[in-house]
Amino acid sequence: MPTPTPTRAADVPKPPTSLVRRARKIDRVLAETYPDAKAELDFTNAFELLVVTVLSAQTTDKRVNAVSPTLFATYPDAAAMAAGDRTTLEEMLKPVGFFRAKTESLLKLSGALCERFGGEVPAKLDDLVTLPGVGRKTANVVLGNAFGVPGITVDTHFGRLVRRFGWTDETDPVKVEHAIGALFPKRDWTMLSHHLIWHGRRCCHARKPACGACPVARWCPAFGEGPTGYDEAAKLLRTEGRA
Image (cartoon, rainbow, N blue to C red):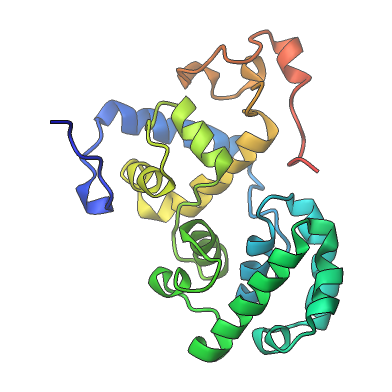
């Protein structure tokens, strides 16, 4: 019978020392490459971060950042948003796409915050994931960046890179989270997420990675999926996340 795939952090077998060393070396180099790595969504508090993270689904951070000043000037907290006018909110959210569905999500989310948490964003993962539209990815973003609670954010970039790096072959986000968590100290989880997401947006692209200009190419088993010559690869590099 096949070995069952671990679904909890406690079930993940201890990874080989060589893999741990290689993974941590890659992260150290990425930390040096992207010393300013951070969440690229604009926010000033936990509520704003929760909202913009929900809005960022199927759109770009830049589009969300463009609407957030007006959004939070009108709805500065959960109570204001829960009582907000649906039509007005939809009009504000048109630039981010799927605006009707996202309006519904924000109204339900802010309502739940008011009804169950006194209008405040909870600082525990188990509480966050009970909120409408909030999964582990969103919860970890909020925990790590608003509350300083270490968390691994498994978005499409993170998942792609950890598989290319050979850190795991898992595709389920929760299993990826647990597998990668076993390779790094918990204190490093939030910044590790930033490093990989920044690298995925700027260099290790989905369709054509800039292998020849990649700072961690020597440790990457997927080297060669993109152009390996520096000049050609360098043309693919971006100085910021996609617009």
